[in-house]
Length: 405
Image (cartoon, rainbow, N blue to C red; front, side):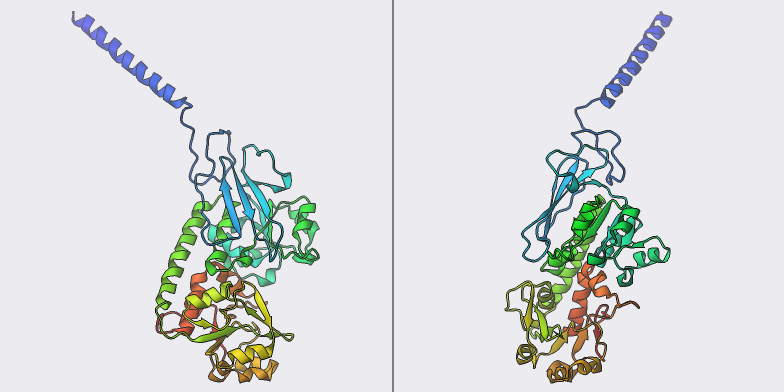
């Protein structure tokens, strides 16, 4: 009797084990729930599943107006809406996850496999993006090494790992073909004589236009970090970095909004008989407003620059409190007066309230204000507030600006 009971117990245990294995096997082979990918998709997909979202981490564009992105299961459609001033065209790029099929209905020149592994940048403004995203190792070419300030890129150039390929009309297409990057990131101006993207396309290379310089706000320009991130599948990193930038910028701007005294300010300098003054809808005007100043051309609602005469500037700005953003070659008040003695007629010069955005120029003339500064608008804003309202940020030391001695 005992033997019979023991035998039945063993049979029951075996049946339970068999049932458990069967359930696990069925669960492992179930197709009702599509597989999920790791947080960062860095390699090609080994097997394609049309139900899988290959881009689980997405960016949202909140400040930049010049580009947008639409996500699909295995590809992204990136549109550059305003590539240059008065542009009648837009550019569209289809970023397809490596190892998945290319969608139909698009021109092959628009299709770029992501994540890209090699890139050439034809503007220094893109380089801080690569550093912040941690992908400088993918950079194999730049336009002009003399202008570069980004430390990670400078170090790689010292190691001889980056090729100088020229820019605009002087672009060396043969050299580009030799290094054969997955992508060339450039910019356009609408000038057929100097724009290089048609030459790059004709050579059969993938090219993308970055139009951050068209943005009318500091945060809008900075948000193009996300545009670069799309080509590397680094959306999560870009979103986190930019969110932190916005938080810092807004917190600093809030400190200056309650000030009662807003000093008057003008910018620029006379160049070959023309003084180019940014309009009131420009990113420069936005910076100055957020810093608690009264920009004298704020009422001119233009996002571009206004070509004005010296006499026009002097009539309006003779008694202005501050003068900013002059020639990057001026470091002393003697420098500006040596170029044109009429500059001495400005009250800002007489009081010594002239500040220039040339505190970070490398030995070969590259100004980091136009490179790292675009990616760090909160630092530039801190500089401006320190100039206009030093009591608000007593511990801040000027980074991009310096006072002309």
